[in-house]
Length: 105
Image (cartoon, rainbow, N blue to C red):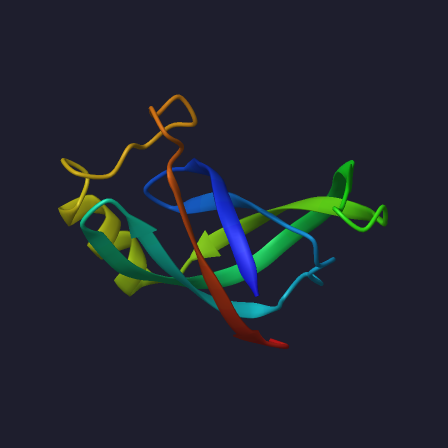
């Protein structure tokens, strides 16, 4: 499922999806940003509706923001990559898009 990172820190991230992800849902976010390719792993801690969008077919979709807590390996990876990853929502061109792969925790 597609997703976008809205905010990124050393210990977690906020993501935007059109799926209402339940707390405890374990996921891997395959981040793509310019030449960067990373797999960020963690668990959904919260999820709430953020806004509604209209599709080209005229359907209304709810967009959700979810908080993800990283596992220890991902925290280490993000710390090592801090010089190339924008650790804020103010990055030009956004922080990154990717695909979510997950399963209930």
